[in-house]
Image 1 (cartoon, one colour):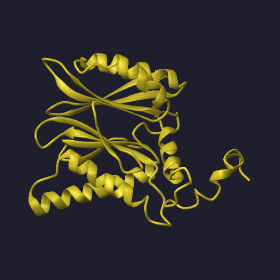
Image 2 (cartoon, rainbow, N blue to C red; image 1 turned 90 degrees about the vertical axis):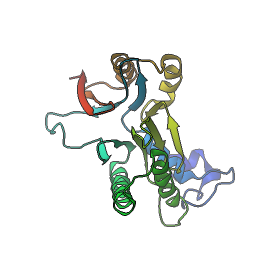
Image 3 (cartoon, one colour; image 1 turned 45 degrees about the vertical axis):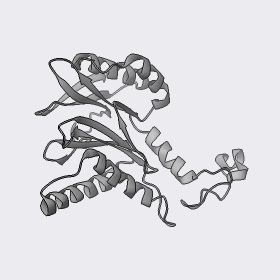
Length: 237
């Protein structure tokens, strides 16, 4: 018997199938999938806006090694026309599957109807896929939370996150990965919509740095109305 089963004997066998509720109303496989997300590197996305500039900044914790190529694993996916982008936290193979499905769906919409759905509709499309994997015996939930962000069909900047259970959430700030529960209360007291770009960078770094030790850098992606730029800042050599 595993340590988990020793501590939770009343839950034995209730985590054997994804669509089996425990007596206290929990779907344990979904909780395990969310735990996989919480073990990922910290990712923070936020909106910022001043009189001169409006945009979205995403800070992704990246681990480096002298043996790795810096860009051997791309974390930002261009989903459509350099206006809609995605990143993820959790199991990378699961996120690659979802992003492939998103790109196929967007290309079909563009080809068939000569228009693309809103970011809200796209987030709901992903949510429905995630939910499907939580209802079919023999499947498992996808152990990844997606962030979908960009310039929406109405010209507004939007950030959506979709968790393994299939819940879409529109946010001003999204925090995923390690130390999420500790960062959220501090972010609530520190964030304000009128941050400048430099203030947003420093705020993200201040939350990521305490959770890492060495061989770490922050991969910033900055989306403005007409371009996406990249900036790398080393936290620890």
